[in-house]
Image (tube, rainbow, N blue to C red; front, side, top):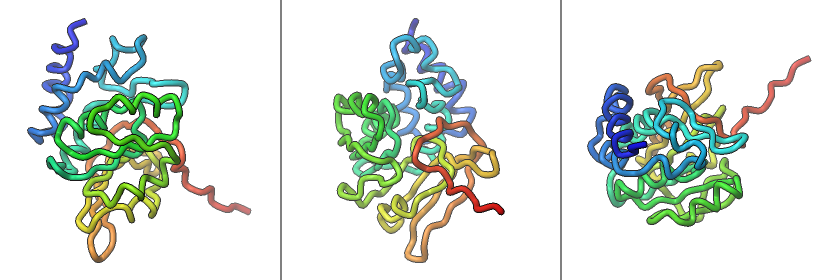
Length: 210
């Protein structure tokens, strides 16, 4: 398989049509080999516009969803970024290729072991919902997957003016969300409906029923 051609096709048929227009994001995603971040048996489907399984419970989110969030975050070289639910490290590698200083948090031991080889990425093992406060605060936080709620502990790791993006499940509908921290609090807005790989540790508490 010609992976270089697959990356070009990904940019032209998946990223650009779905409003991934930031030149830094496009250039990084056109250069980072997505096939290197999936199991060997799945390299042939690394560039499909769907979630690619990483193991029994985790997956690699579609490139267009990741690219759209990175575009909306307006990431710039020299900023400090936290990737929550780093998985096999694809989004972390893209951010590092964009020139950001990246901290990647992962709770799965097998996936965490893959993060150590990434250049420009500091890997942290621990519960995803706790983030990595010792390495913060951050200009950018990317929750690299679908969650049911955003913990205050993550929002508090943002610098004033810092941005956070996540796939948030609302009423059963997965949506890409963007939030900004200001002196007045944290505001969140919907970007688009899009698929993201679910992450553990972010379940909404069950409502009490009689």
